[in-house]
Length: 352
Image 1 (tube, rainbow, N blue to C red):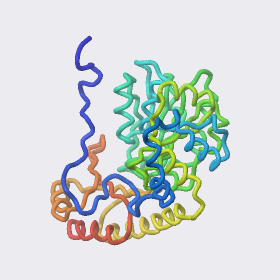
Image 2: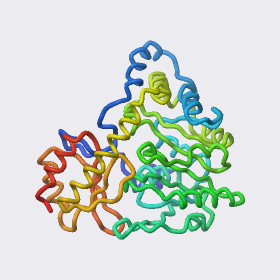
Image 3: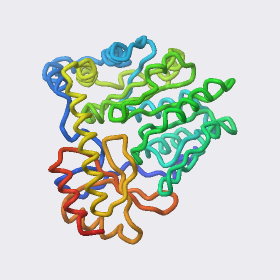
């Protein structure tokens, strides 16, 4: 056996930007802080950490089942939704089979596909020129083992049109021995549209969610998947047990079952401040993509990338930078309390 594996030769370990910042808008987390119900539960969960957690995150599974009205056998959990993506690639595709997806998208998707020896089959969406989508059935050509879509998408913040996504679900379900469809809804709370309620009734559709974003629990690393029981069984085989810790599974369940209105307040504030931020950016001359998430993707003009980076570094404001396949540059900024947005706007103000 050669070392390292040839499939990993072009990969690098995940390395966040180490530049110190005062205002971190780089990772799409909840800038209002963690869910209060989770915090209250964590205080009493410490006594249980001498024991293993439940094998498949049972408190979270039952909370999801209750919240969305699905059978608990149709739910599993993971160490964040990216863990479930990785497990799904092992569960539903043989090495060498293909993953079809819209690009650009969540960076860990391509990473997990490569580490699981899958063929990458992207359909590139030109977001710089309108973002026209391919026919949903085009993703099924040449019989991929898996299809992945993210809605709202990371890093673009755009949600797939309901009719387009429904057509994709229907096409996958109609295909004899067709692929498994993964619908990543990490930012669905901010969008208000979802295919999750019907996922348990479909035969090849898995919906993935996380508590890292709207719920403010990124440090607990809790994700969940909803789909037909037979898919969940196979996913659990590839996932393995004990992926969600004792404290994490209890705190996440408390947040999911909370009825205080905290989550809706966060979503309402995020939507309002997102609109306010986009208006202010537009007034400064910055172009951004339409957003259905808790972040905004801002286009960096040709030739301005170094100046923008230098200014943000000087002002200690952190964003996430992207270069798309067409050579265009972009920066992604999380939406949060207005004083943080003002720091971003002040840094960008005279660069256009």
